[in-house]
Image (cartoon, rainbow, N blue to C red; front, side, top):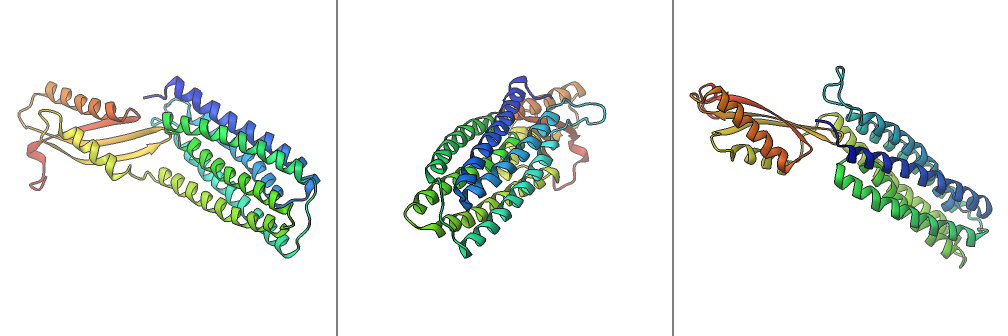
Length: 296
């Protein structure tokens, strides 16, 4: 089952938009930091540069993940998204460490800021662009369920907090509270690091073929058992690859049921699950009642 053309278009558009926003903000923050000397703006610049690298990696991964299944990759290339998420977590973690180091240094050696008006203007533009990108990314994630776009969205959600904190720090620094600029930078670094760990944990879960949530698997089991003629179901297994879910289960059927009817019931189970979970690819193994263990 291939990814729809609309889903592919949305994922490519979201990846390209993220890269464009990151590079635009990096350029604006570089100018503002050079003129102001703000450690918070330096943190924002560092983060935007890493955003650009991560978004480029994400763009390439999404392009590869959207390739249809071939003879060497019969389940498709969807796990490239999880690899991209893992790479992004590394970029974000490095960003957090650099921001934290700069913040500690400026707490110990505070300096007055210059060109605060320019810095504030740049941060207002950053907030607007980041918020617009997040709204679009959330829409794409809701429609496609993309792991890579979700990781990018978490990334830019932390950026929204980062940009808000930088703006507040610049405003307060204008009243002589120069250390707050550095303290905000350190607090932001911890939040960015937490985001990196979240992305890494989710990506590893996909790469290790973690099961879908208990609520989803139980619902799939109920849908299979509700098909008229089925005696039950067992050994339901699930895993995720990109935007696709792969589901396998054993369907318990009467011994005397004709093969044609067995085939029809298996297709009904597949249809029942895919109707509620359209991203699922379902494989049903029919089991006659006589081969089931006594406890089944």
